[in-house]
Every structure is written in structure tokens, then in C-alpha cells.
Image 1 (spheres, rainbow, N blue to C red):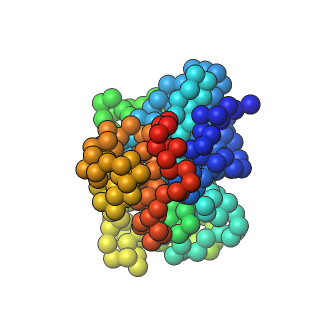
Image 2 (image 1 turned 135 degrees about the horizontal axis):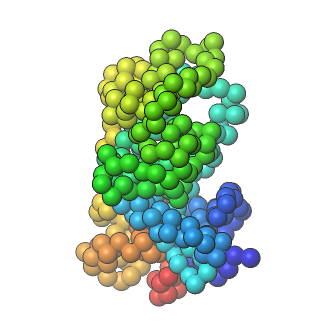
Length: 318
């Protein structure tokens, strides 16, 4: 039984939307703004030796700010649990979206793949690798924009992106062969390159699509297309004209004066004082409130806080 008393009054917990080996995800409503959030709940006892992965996940999410990576709003740690308050994506998993359509058309596939490549390239530029990329770990928001989630297996190579990692992890169905075999990433033992790595190519795929897939599904990683090459690959540029942009279009720590004004009135302080308080970036309830107000502004929704709960919540902070 998860003890959610720490969330009481701040979030209205609703249904469970996901369960994994070590985590449960619930949808909830942020009381002050009325915005939906996803709360990832992890029991420390169940994590065991994997507890350090939560620390890495939190560290990564705090440092990453990208329009195709799910945002972290707040972190709550108790004696028994971690609660990660995350961006809620109403469109569900990319996996379910694909299954519901049987298969995606080339145009939609290209749009989605550009977004995935943008997120992965940004990750690598920041010195992180995800290590569990799969359709189940990619969500769609209400506007059908993709968001990469679940950084529980992410890593930050100490020697940079050219450094080799060793851990065999993730989902074998989606993993590179050298990872499944427990070899160094980017290296292949002698003889392994002779394995053919055969797979079926559906007849309805276009020639250009087949060429792209072949460039990625190379058994020998030295022959495999790189993420930087994918950014400007002709197939991804078709209909767009421009390479994929990996730079973030969203700055988490950006100042939004309208949002600050709303919060400063609740605190009875000036907007500048409110900003100085927020700039500590403690990933507390204030951080969540500010970021969710920014979300409302971007969507064109009214900027307001719940008048019935504002005073009590601002007197008692998480």
C-alpha cells in the first residue's frame, strides 16, 4: 500500500495509468492550477540495489530540458518512497498508437521519427544515453507531440560519449546485438560481424524507407548510421527541407512575467522576489506550480490559481 499522505491537499490522485517492475504511475490533478500530471511512485525497499538508478534518473531529468522529453516538475522523497511529478501525456504510448492503426503511413512515421531523433541527439549532446528506447517509452501529448520518458536505465559515460559502456540492460527486442551479448557498446568481438542479422522487410515499405532501416540495423556498429548523420538524412528531410533540429525549443528556467505575477500575488511578494525564490530550482511545489502555469499560458488557457486552496497551500509547503 503506497502512502500518499504527503501528496494530500497538493495533488488529487486519480487512476493508475502504468505499472513497471519498480514503479507505479498515477494520473493526478495539481490542485492550484488544475493541470493534470503523472506521478511516478517508487518504493525504496523494492528498488534494492537499483536505488542508485533513481538518483541518476532524477539527476538526468533535472539537467534535461527539451520539447520531446517529458518534463520533471517536482521530486518528493520520504523514508519509504520517491514521488516524481512529471508532465502528463494524454495521448498514451506510441506503441498503442501504432497497434491501433495496424501500421503508420510514411508521412506520420517521418514526423514521429524526426521527433525521436531530435530527442536522442539532444540527449547525446548533453552526455546521456537512454538505453531503453522503445515505443512503450515514448508518449504522445494532447497535440500528438512525442515525449521520451523513463530514464531509469540512462547513463552518463564518465569519459564522454566516446567512452564504452558495459551493462547489458533494456529490452532485448529493441536493443543492439552487441548490447544483448553483453559486449562493450560500439565494439564487436571478432567473428560476430559474420552473423547475418537477417530481418523481414514488409513489401509495402518504400525503397528509401528500406535503405534508411538498413543503415540503422547494421550488425557491425562501425557501419551503423550515427545519430548526427540521421539529423540530415534525406528521408527525414523529405517534405520538410531542413535537417532535424536537436537544440531545445523549451527552456525550463526561462522567466515568464505573467506567471510570476500570478504566483507573487498569492505569496504577497513582488514578482522579482518570487523569481529569486524560484531560481533556487528545488523541484518543489513552487517549481511545479510555475511550470504548470507556463504550460497553461502556452496552451492559451486562463492564468489563474484555485482561489479556494491558494492561501492554505502557500502557507504549508511540501
